[in-house]
Amino acid sequence: MLGLFTRAVLVVGAVAGIAGSALGQTKVVKVDGSSTVYPVTEAVAEEFQAATKGAVKVTVGIAGTGGGFKKFTRGETDVSNASRPIMKGEMEDAVKNGIEYIELPICFDALTVVINPKNTWAETMTVEELKKIWEPAAQGKITMWNQIRPEWPAEKINLFGAGADSGTFDYFTEAIVGKAKSSRGDFTASEDDNVLVKGVEGDKFALGYFGFAYYAAHAKKLKAVKIDWEKDTLGPVEPSAANVIAGKYNPLSRPLFIYVNKKSVETRPEVRQFVEFYIKNVKELSAEVKYVPLPDSAYELVKSRFDRMDVGTVFGGHPEVGLTIEDILKRETVSEAKSHGDDKK
Image (cartoon, rainbow, N blue to C red; front, side):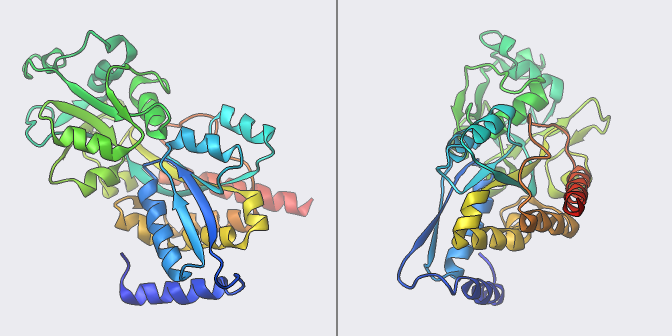
């Protein structure tokens, strides 16, 4: 995935960090959660495992953000991938089980609405039209394309979307319908985005949504819908890194996170080394899998938060819509300032 020179540099750095590991004994770092974040974490895991020459194995599951947090707050995993911030109930579960966590933003995603390449009529859709399709009241009532616009085909809309344990489901319903987890139920749902990709690829009348990386990996067999959000008056905007960075792809651009178990970091050097490796290399690797890296200044703040072992959340509570890269910088800066203030007390 990385060039030979870059890989060599990573190998030297990581092997030096793992020098204290017991020879011949493979250590395991357990990661689970968001299928959207999976391509980033899997890329990091592959490079880290190569760098450590098999001394550490990183397992990466795709239980969905919600499913991942269930395991994480029970202490079953070391790192949780999340395509939305931790929610109140999950915070409460963590407290109940004595799990302290470090929240680390890692990159941005452009949640992508997709259609089949043979679909020539719905290349642009408004947020209101998407809401008309996906809101709970649409179930059993809005079933045909021509119910959205009269000039569209009198054909059934076959829907594919994220499962209820997915952070993508939470974010999409919040952004489009207006309330997290508020959705019609008569659609093909999965926490595995590859299932959704295949569904839309094989159906001219399909409509689905998932993370940009999965669209980019199958761009020849899918078509991204341009989103027209009436509130920002920009007109139709396609999902792209440039539009996310410019703050134009609304309301479906969003930050992605990993959450790290503090105890795992404190008691197991391989977890600390993996997270340090993650922070150091996620900018390059997230770009390789077609997500949008944060600015260098943001990664410096993220590294500072991890170095301080700054537990808790500054983003949690609900799947916030409309967070920009500037918001990430502001919140990380405030968090760092508060921490330094606490250090002086």
